[in-house]
Length: 96
Image (cartoon, rainbow, N blue to C red; front, top):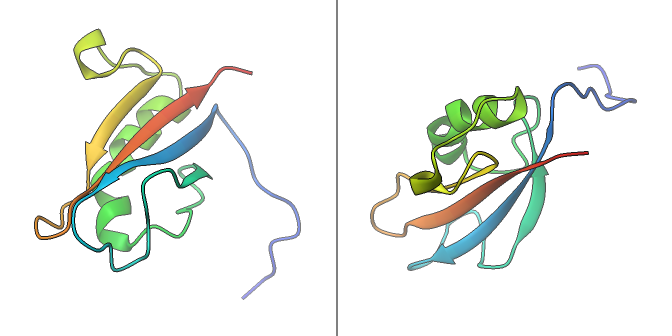
């Protein structure tokens, strides 16, 4: 596998923040955790969670937005598909 020397960036930067966790997240995410995420970087989310939020990542990263009822044009809160230990995440677009 080739080493990634330079970070590939296109579109807007996104920050993901864990808002809540009921039970124990098996990947260790806890409320308050914050990290950058993109269509090219899973940010160490489990595959199930990343797959679930991927369309929303694309929407925010490449200029789309959401209605106010969903959090406004620059953010959205989503829940992990693990119904036994759901984690809620906020995706927020940074306008540089």
